[in-house]
Length: 87
Image 1 (tube, rainbow, N blue to C red):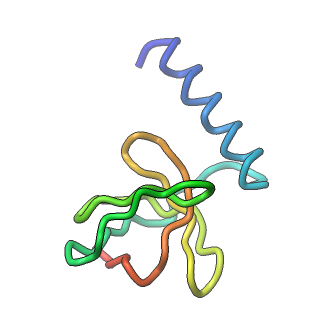
Image 2 (image 1 turned 45 degrees about the vertical axis):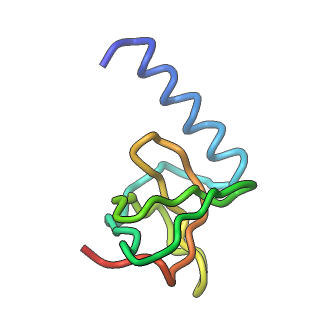
């Protein structure tokens, strides 16, 4: 990883912590998959855009309805628990 890429990731992580009021280090708890039968969602606001069968890193189990996740493009957002499957 180049220095430029590393700084870009650090900046994205700082923006995530500010936007979601997340304190502490960002640790991946587990990985989950978006249900292949789920409808694709565009996202928006604090919601993460979803693609069928996509593998997401779980950052935090926020409540009974949503999970805070990160996708392969290092974008963060909330995902409904109803569309998530354990690997």
